[in-house]
Picture (spheres, helix red, strand yellow):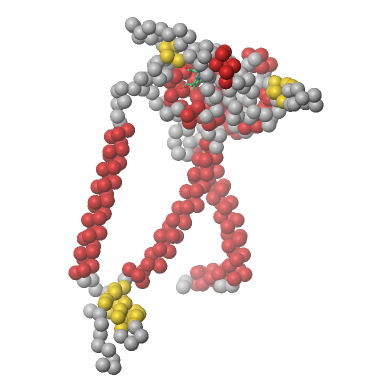
Length: 309
Length: 70
């Protein structure tokens, strides 16, 4: 057996206690360690697969006792980890919001400047803002006044406050739509299904006053009447405004309002991968270099005879 | 060390002044490279979906639209 002594520790009375020996041949002890490690790896693998399998099985639950219909999943163009929003769709969705939903729903967290370079050019966004009257003030006399909007203004709300909104909608509050796709489970699919899901209640179900039957809404009765109809508005790019097109576009727009960083985030993901992949290789190599001596040494404990005894 | 690595070592790594300079220049070049590559990949993947690709298909909102939005 070839072994080299790398270092040793000793006590005051020069008794050597520990030798660190570099050893080239493997011993039975190392073999058993190898088996142990294999057992840990197999066990860990089984545990992980089990946990993932359980999570998957759990996600396949049928939710048979829910009080709303199951959502149909749509093939959104932004689904993949590197897929951007379809900006033509976002633009059309803004047109839908502006001409339909804005009558009842606010979009408090979106400013005209956010639209620049996303759905509108700067010129267009300025024109758009100038067409709206924004409340500002107080002026020198302490009164609030209206003025044409600027790029830095946020979109005006249809109602001055929640109570006015409730009063205008038979007691139901139309929620702010800025973050609605994040605020509902499976938001995009939910909103699309909700907007296109209006239908006659099943036979024998009694109607509710001021409520409309929609199986995708929890409980089935929603205060918002059906909003979207074929050819309800005219798109500025000439796309045919079918009901499902309107619903899809406004949903994609609301996805953007909730996640304005969506595209930047995915662009950054590519950058992060490009930067961290080589760094990961380097750090793995560095680790191997640093551990090489530690992995190939052997520590033996014994007390040899003291020299001067 | 092969002759190439030796030359590189002598040129860039040997002296503190040159290594510091190579780090500064290298970081700048690397950042540019990653940035441009990532942008290129992202735009290749999303060809026809970004605003700069679809901008031309929309015309300015007309007066007509202004009326219906009120």
